[in-house]
Image (tube, rainbow, N blue to C red):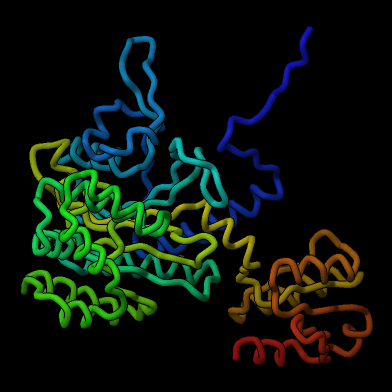
Length: 416
């Protein structure tokens, strides 16, 4: 009898307890931010009728898992959550507005597996339904920015653009309206493919060499929105919309905003502002979103304004692992003084210090290895000598220097 091999399906993963605990911790931190901003949870099914995706995934059908059920109905494993949310909102027109909703949902795409990209993965979506004003867009971007800070990210860029602006500029360079969606879907691949390939694909959909050249020049405009206004003649309404959003974001204290005309967001349903968070060249985008004012109306009798964002949970967790990101400021290591270790940790926490405690009762060496791998800045030793002196020994993990300090002195140092 031939040996049977049981293997994971390509693009999927198994998670053992240690990794599941880490993933749950990240999810809890993200959920905490969502709820701090007033978002409420929702959940939809993993499968939908293929008609739900409609033309919105046109050109990307190869990424969608489709099959027929026993009733000969064409079913899809959902590649994203937004169409499901739109269906739910359209089916429940009496829901009060505005709605602020979030979900952690497993989705499937037949993509090429690579670092941070899988065929089965989680997305963290949050949306504001029923608000036209740019204040909703700003609230979503500010929430995404707060998630990045909560997870400990220091260096990231929030790329911003407008579909309305892109439509106007494409028209100005001679791209016909019926080619807008195809052109944007191709442009959206600029961070993955060479300019030569992009130009070739634009030519295949019927754009002239002149239009392609001017369009590629547009894509190089990045930085301040003032540069866009100075370089191009932009409709007054679009200028006012973008400047209002930027003013709101300034009030929120959101930094690292970069206006980028090469940002396209390939899905057809975006109608206004679009945005994406880039966390470095190795991982690239960790999430993106935008305004989609017409999508809900496709499933119901009336249009409902909406704006949302989705974090790629797998990419976020990959980046956290690679950069040793942590929110723990001090790791308490009791040496046969567990009760004092607990009391000290609780004093740190009561003072607003993010403190963790060794609960495995490992040796000093293993604890230091753990703190180093986690990227924790300080460890706090508590042994019998420290208890007698009513102090703790604080080690700076970067320099290796140690000081004997009172708990109050440690709190003052870490708070500063």
